[in-house]
Structures are given as C-alpha cells and as structure tokens.
Length: 607
Ligand code: FES
Image (cartoon, rainbow, N blue to C red):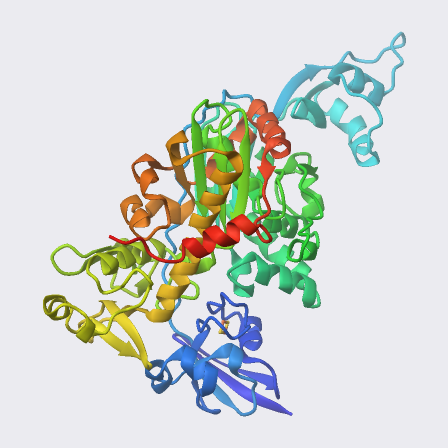
C-alpha cells in the first residue's frame, strides 16, 4: 500500500509516493529535505520539526518535546511519524548560513612544505648508456625500488615528453610521482579541519606559503546526528551506513576543493597535497573505516596512525600523483584535531604550563608544556552547539550570541538578524546573568516569581514564563512579532551537565599531573564556541575555574592552524607525529576521580 506525500516548497510542489509505515524522517532525507536531527532520529532532541497536514496530531512524548504552541501551529516531529495516510508537508525556509570560525594563527614553522616538486634533467640514453627508462629515473631521482605498476606505466612517455627533462613530486622528502619537465612548477596544497559540525579548508601556494583561499561549510553528515556516537551508530547499524557517511564527506571535500580552486583561479591538478585533521571518528569515516569499536569499551580505533593515501583511492579530486594525508590521532576520543590545536598553540615548545580546551560536541582538554602533555576527552554533550537546548541553535545567522543583564536585558545576534534561537556563547552569558540576578539559584533551579525579591520579580516581569508546564526565562521575543527565545529548566540542567563535564575534566587532569591552578600560565580556548565564549561568564557558571579566567586566550580555529602547519612544514608534521606517541591519554569514563569531580562541578558557584 502506498500514500501520496505532497511537499510544498516555496517554488515547487512535489508529489512522491511512499510505502505505508515508512518513517517520515528517512523519507524526507531521501527527498533531499534535510532537517536538524541532533539525536539522529531517536526521538529525544525535538529538533526535527516540520509542518504537516494530514495524519494524527502529536501526542505523548512527541508533544512534550515539540510543545503545545508548535503543535497548534501544525508542527510534528518527523522521526515520530510512520506514514499511514496521504500527507502534505511544508518545509520551513532553509536556515541561514552558519558562522564558522576560520581564523588561523600565523605560521610559526618555517616554510618547507610536505609536498614539493623538483626539476631534473635526465641524462639522455645513447649507445654507451643503455640504462632503461626506469633505472634512469630512479638514478636521477634517488628513488629506491620497487615502483608500482601504475607508476611504471607512465614513465616511457613522461621522460620523452620534454626531452628527458622531468619534475619529481616528493612527499616529506620521498618521491611519489613524476611529470614532464614542461609542466609548471605551480604546487598547491589544501589543509582541512573536518569537524563533527563544520568543515574549514585552507588553500596554500606550497612554493611561497601564501594562503590563497579559505572556505567553510557545515558537515553534511550531521543529518545522521549531531555527535560522533550517532554517526558511529549509523555507520555500524545501518546497511550501507558507512558508505553513506563516507560518500557525504568525500563529496563535501570535493565541493570545497572546487570553491578553493575557483577562488584562487587555479586548476584542480595543481593541488598536490591535501592534509586532513579531525576527531578520530571523522578520520575513520573519511577513510571509510568501520568506527564501531570506538563507541564501546575499551574504545579501540581501527587506527590512530598517520596515513598517506593515493587521492584516487579515497576519491579526493586533486592531482592523481599527489598525496592525501590523514593526520594521526592519540586515542578514540583525542583526535588529530586536538593534536593540531596543541601544535598550533605552541604547547610543545614552551616551558610554561598551558591548558588547551577545545569545546565542540565533545570537549578535549590537554594540559602540560614541552616536557609532557596529558589529555582527556569529556562528553560535554552538544549543548553548546545548540542540541538538546529547546531554543538552541548553532552559530548561525540570527543566533543570540551575547546576552547582557546590566540595566535590563539586551542581546546581540549573529549578523544582527532577528533572533531565531540561542547559541553556546549566548547560553553561557544568559546563565551567568540569571545567576547574578538571582533568577537561577546555585543548584540550577529557576526560581518562581514569588520566590524572588519584589524588585527582581518586577524587573523581569514578563520574562519568567511557563512553557508547556515548565518554568522558563525569556531572553528574546518579548514582542509577539518576534520569535520567542527562552531557556527552560531542562535546558539549564543540560547546561549543568555539559559544564560539569568540562570542569570535572580540568580538575582530574590537574590532579593526575600533580599541577595546580597557579601552575597554569595560559588557557587556550579553541574551536568555534571557545573562541566566542566570555571567559568571565564561563567562570561565573563554573565551566572554567575562577583562577583561570584572566589567563584565557582564544586560539581561533586551532585545528585548522595545526593542519595548515603540518602541510606547510615537514618539521611541524614530524612534531605532530611525535606528539601522538608522547601525549599521555587518560580515559575518564571509568575514572573514579573524574566522577567525583563531575558531581562536585554540577552546582553553579555561589556569588
Ligand atoms: Fe527527531 Fe531528534 S527528535 S531527530
């Protein structure tokens, strides 16, 4: 039995037949309608909202997640619907662009790119020099046998194409390819930071070190969940799930390369190197490796080593003789992105102890100096990226990104657009302000208006609201024409969990290393959220220890900086590889000290 699903898009109406009992979320995905699905369709996030006409109204858990207001406007949660009648679907206009952090630090390593070209004039054969073509190439290039068949095949034509003048292509000092000597010496490379949520890419001229183009976009895999666990689940449990995730990231990388070459006005085959940093799961999905064992104790990745791969083997569209380099990781939850961030912050070169905190869907924390580094990872939860927060959004246009409680409430939004939700930095500001004003008590409880001093209740009259029988605080949208952006009691609990995980991780690392807060000279906040967070407010809610708030520094896209360094400098790549074997990793999932520190950090600090 089939039903007709009519999709009403602004400039198009499509009718598609659907088998009875098909899940609407999967159906819409196949119809190229992508909804926010941080919980990957497990029915817990409440974000896969879509206007539906026909079928049953929302009820039970779906209604609780959706809210009466949205339900009365005709919204349903797509993952809750199994098609049992004809339906009319009205997708919202797509959300505006994300603001993705692409700032990278100035290169600290000298230019000595990992991929380079060198010119050579081979001695021409004659009756006295009867060496074969391959021998001639190997002698001139200092190349050791054996060569692969695909390399052998090109050599007779290449050496004769320009009268025995050739260009060797080297990776990290080793020969990887050869081309005729009349080819340009142009040699470009791209560094990628593959985040769970966003992707940032940088194109460099490898002869000069000049940055020629930058591009950032959202990770298309996020339709299968906001966090790595959802992606791992999809890769391991769904038929073709791994291939689906691999295809998505590869085609996103190729689209990104297209944008980079267009901006720099170069040709695809002038790119000889592509270097990738990302968390361990992203690196697995990029290589098409099954990441399932990462998600279950004892959390063992298929590989944490650096891999140089033929671009064609993973479908990356750069010069086919170039190198695709997947940077090494430390463990299942301390990936190449964290190592790149440590490299970029200079922690491996300094005497002074520094703390690096990279807050994303997970938070990676690294403590130490040039003599030793210790790392851990905590499941901060994607609260700071908008997931599991009722009005939460990522760093997109219209996200409330700062909230100020001095003299009433004022806020700013990304791109000064009308507020559509609240992102991580706004969440931290709002919670800090709510604590200072007494709206929130140190246990994390939102006070009732009659529990507040008369003056406070008056000042925030109209903001202390009830949403679907739950206490909430209105941040934006007092005017009914605007979208209401508020924090509910449940949102505050999510925030407490996330900040307690990070604070607990910091305390555990300090204890394990025998260091004190006074020993820490600098705190680097990496990643999109870390870059925009107000350190004073982060300390107010207990996300960072009070003693560290004056020591914080934004590290920009430190993972992107580190990946770029590994592309532009052999010394940086060497340091990168060395670090992965030298960083001590502490697994916190069963660490008794962490559990204690996490519970201790759950409360908000007293004023
Ligand atoms: Fe539907 Fe999360 S509730 S995707």
